[in-house]
Length: 471
Ligand code: HEC
Ligand code: HEC
Image (cartoon, rainbow, N blue to C red; front, side, top):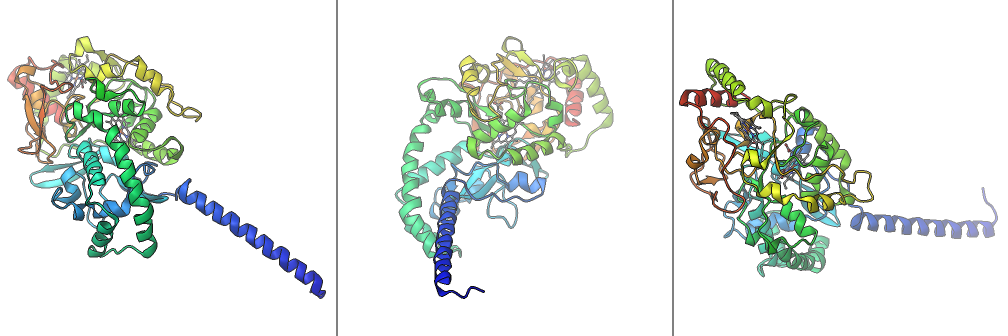
């Protein structure tokens, strides 16, 4: 018990001072957390949910969530089908599609995750099925990014329009959010849109990517100030499948076999998807990566004739396909030179020594700084697991189905539609009758090369196709 009034007064003042200092520290920490170190992301503690909806640290550069939600209402005339129009896949009861995560970095923002580019929907006999780890054949990433840019610059996108739309959609914004939107978020978005427009200029001088493809090479080149808008280089590739990484642990992968480190392939993908060095969620990416090591390819959804599959395996062995495509033997995981493989050279050519030099600077100052990149002058011999679900084929997605890949290049379709989910189990590929028209005559889109199996008899081709379905 303190009885002296003087001492009690002093202790009171000291107590008050300590409280004030603590308060100031808390406010400072909170301010720092709000602006600099964002709120922790949503973790689902379930590999599948984390893959579909979890964060990889890509939200820092993401679009403000509260505005994002209202875009389909405000721009109904431009995307009548909402986000579905870009090929995003929605599951019941979710307001975000597979492949988008939300996280507060100053304001709530949406960002990409691994499922954005590595999950597809495949529809056989009218039944759509979501396939995790498959190339996102429906997603038109470029069209989505261009839309985001276009609406950001559109005078019709105002704070008032967002506030009104949110209210009409039954999710009214509170007073603080309304003020933040008016005075901070919207003006900042308009400013960023201006900068973004400049960084997208290169897309207009190259062939459009269309659904299922992206040009990560030129995205990096733009970031590094290499002015891709001034040259004809193209690095557009089909999204690859990412399951069964166990079969890819020791080889050289990426389409051109430019990297033999699994973690660097994962990190570079996350960084390309919008993660920043300092927010790269290495723990989460590590967990997803472990899961992808074991994720099994999907089973073929049609019927298989076991006899035909067996004869197909014989053709496959006789034609020496296994030397390049079966894990653990021969040249699988190595690179076949452009001169031999003969497929479109653009993607391999883009990744030259200058790109290697630039990539080896990525992550400077961090323990994970990249050091496994090389220029390869060819394309990687990859395992063919779940190949049926990896259409369209070749690195640039220039051949619509497996049956066409076994035809000589002159007989492969010069143009075809991409982006639908309807699947043809006979020819093994998507069978789209509308959508984005792919044109193999455009730079980087060539459908030539990979002549293996193209000279076989009709019977042998049918057997080989049956075997490929079974992988
Ligand atoms: C914006 C789309 C996009 C996102 C997001 C993305 N990837 Fe990819 N990923 C690609 C593309 C495109 C390639 C092929 C690049 C190339 O070879 O040119 C690729 C290649 C890969 C490869 C190498 C596959 C192979 O067989 O060569 C792995 C592994 C991979 N990604 C894993 C991931 C993981 C893990 C994540 C999340 C941390 C992720 N990706 C996020 C587009 C993406
Ligand atoms: C000398 C090595 C080599 C041989 C032999 C070979 N391939 Fe390939 N294969 C490749 C390379 C390299 C690619 C990737 C080319 C590209 O994308 O530009 C490829 C791509 C493929 C693809 C498409 C993969 C995808 O994801 O799009 C299929 C299917 C395929 N090969 C099947 C076969 C079959 C069947 C045979 C035997 C008749 C065969 N290959 C023989 C090297 C080979």
